[in-house]
Length: 495
Image 1 (cartoon, rainbow, N blue to C red):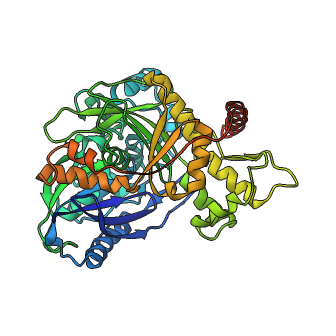
Image 2 (cartoon, rainbow, N blue to C red):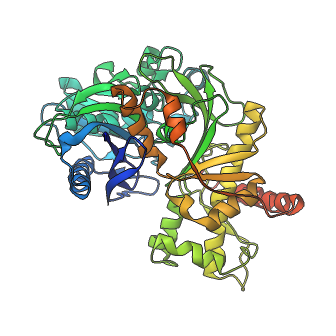
């Protein structure tokens, strides 16, 4: 049996999962890291803590599996994409906390770009004018953190997304990233698959601080024998988390799509080798590039706060003590009692792209209970997903009849039923819902020949369950219009 490891570094935790060639999970281990919130709208992670947790999860997962690092044929890396970290290549130490994709400190900077520059950025990168992406975070680090500025001047600074930080540490100094992560920086040109000189100049990013851009599926380097695997193992893939889920869901055909339910929600549709530019608030992004094969593109809709809204109910509001309790609490009422919750904690992403929005709970009455708020939180996940999928259907000119879903929150059966009712289509969950990690393993396995072709991966995909809509069309649309009304209440809150 061949074993492939997958290092999945996410927004709230890091985990290592070991798969066999039948895509069966052999073992895994997961550790959460701190969410550092210095100011309203600022979100940071400690890169050193993430690296320490990475070492822990690898060692413990191997112990659980009864394997040694050398028993793995390869490992892949998948990561929270736009989160940006700077480190010193001499000392190996982070120069500042990582700025997380949710961080909005650069919103004003982005809005102050000239209209000519905004238009050029959107065309070259396929992205929106938003603080979400890495370029403005890199600019902030260089201009606001003395240690970063000094390291840049000395030629010792390395600035990149989290995948490049993990690769650098695991390999002992290889500095690279893949096309999917590079496409989320607002610095890579979609057509050339290289850093764009005009964009580098616009954001003041020296090219020398950035990683080499490589394909999603290839051998980048070997792990250090002194590292957590204790052996030389091929690091054979890097892929952004949402693109990893596309590979894990075997979405290799044009118009294949998936929606991942995590800290945020992310829907992608495969557009093949064509760069399709959205007119409905979606992003154009790299889907994957398998070795020397042509790059495959996608349209993406990104929702900032879905699963993290449930964490908010747990950690900030305290109406549940565990995230898993939300399903039973929400199911204790027949509906939300007219309550709508729009969790625009850091503004709204697709299809609105409004940094001025902030969260609201509307429709409260004296009869409202915590159960109604819990149900409204689940409905908010479903409604935000519909906003994105409607935009996707408009851009692709293809009416959606079903949706493949994955991610931890899809274990919530009530949420899946709500999603089917809100969308009016079938929602399909695969047997393996942790498709982000599986996708990184697949890409690594393809690079070393553990799987021969994407068709092998299609053969591994199996359905677990599907849900169909139970609401009438009129009821669905009436409730959706109230959702849109609630969204309007979030806008123009921040001047």
